[in-house]
Image (tube, rainbow, N blue to C red):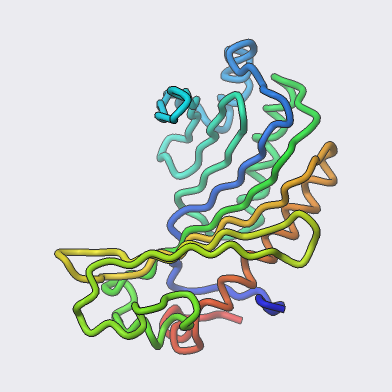
Length: 238
């Protein structure tokens, strides 16, 4: 197995920058039709509202963003998908609880019953000042960082993307590793791993089972990337 099963660990130094869960609708939602109702329902967990525009080759897409008071948690909704975004993530149970509340709000307002894709994306940032190291060749395993592991101060940028099939049908992960740059030198590494199941899901139990699977796969990927030396620096707690 490319990403061996790993046990759950907690770390004193949390490198997670962002976690995103996305459910893509099987058919276009037509958000505007029940937007007022959704705003009223979701207000109990995300009272703040704004819109952002994303420029696409086909035109501009409007995303409706609902956030809590400190912007650590948000719900992003458009005609194609709903996303749960955590900018401060501590444990899976808290994330899942918030997702379930958001899912209930979506059901009450729109009654969505079918999704074509479930995605769970983690973004970790390993920063030299936070970890007190910049020897990335010893911190992160070679297949994921390429020339960054041999850097003697000359590397000005780095990014690699790999798509890997996971150990169940229609499941894959897109792993992007890139250098974080400060004043023309590498100050850290960003690890972006987007796991997904690309098939129809039409029940809450089915979605939950797939989310649990993607969460476990994400953990296996993270533990495959970092070394034992980095685990010590991150203050691993078994």
